[in-house]
Image (cartoon, rainbow, N blue to C red; front, side, top):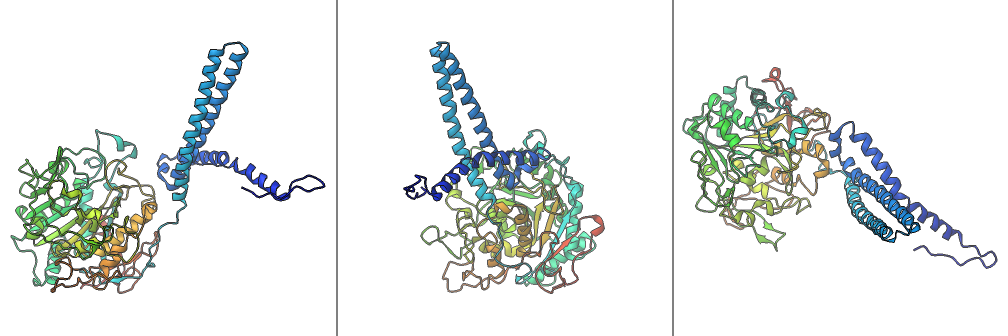
Length: 582
């Protein structure tokens, strides 16, 4: 409350301070109507010509103010009409009708106050969110950390072809057509993109030579000699089938398009020469839905499609009835031991976990991830894909799940222990992976379910189209660093806490900022504990337009992002000349 000076004893006038106070009060009462009117005008001008703009942060902030203003006007109008009619009925001695009108007027006024109160609260929250300072990484651009991996160290191949996708956002609610149909995700284009990316990644001219180079590099760096693939060796693929909660999964929610999995299987069988019966597609936390089986099984019937051991349409159990999709078997003993404690739960140790048998038995792994924001982990890329590599007893998945331990949304400070690093460095998960792939075809805006449908991206070079991209790398950290830069550019409002802290910890796993002794193979304090080495190289690009990393700028360190979008780019690096074979 404004303090008032005593009135002048001669004039009786109140002080100038009191007068200014009344002026301020008079202005404040007009603040909401003026702000609401401006918000309504701004929303209509921006959204009517292009409805997709309604999802922009500024429009999400304007909408509650605009709707509150409209409700405010309608409420005032309704109350005024009711009171006017009540006066007319009183003059005509129609007291019953007058009473009804008065009640209607009071109800209208009460609803207006209630609605506007809630809308104003929502508007304040939206405005606060909209004006929140955008997320800025703590490490400046082009300051690489860690040790780059790969035939060309730190290289990430990026295939971009707008012809891969064809979808109208208005179809997201349809139940008769789906973005993952062949009419909307072009199988031939996707396969060409995968071939282009593989050749760009290795600088080889043919797909057969690509796979020979990949196998030899992996075996050479895992003390197996300079040898390629040997017939009989097993390969496990970990796809991120986030929407696989039912076998009959038919919706437009975020998920891996089947065309990408088909393309990968064709590469392995037809180009790399891997027998079908040596390949396992393993998703131990989700179903392998019919949309995948209908496309993959007729072409590759001898591939093993192993799915969750607890998820079914009626509840959670370990019964799978489809012989084409056997249940994933867990190891008999715990295989992964977490290197930190749960600081959100009295510093208690995180319980160890069993692993899916196909990963333990495999000689090689391929991480087939998708690119999208996530509810608790903030981003989903290759590292987050390992969250699906657990076998749990019925109902136990909710109590003992990596989602619930030390996620960036729960632990927002930098230099903290990160569960993801243990998964990335485990010998049967990230340590066994010869190729990391990120599907970025559809640009999903959310984790899963309603609200995660395909979304066009505004950042260049997409400029209002779907990202239509596929990324590949041999460097676990580098590919997630590139994916993170794309996600933070397009979904700035969803970046909270320290979402790239796990990349710092992984790149510097031998001496991490948190001081954690990362060894996922033994319990904390084990006498034979061995610290992980660097898991790859991390840095951020120079800017969202050029998207250049240190090796693109001619430096002999860091990441190199190589764009290979068309058939003409096949085998071409189109990047810096700084990349060198290991």
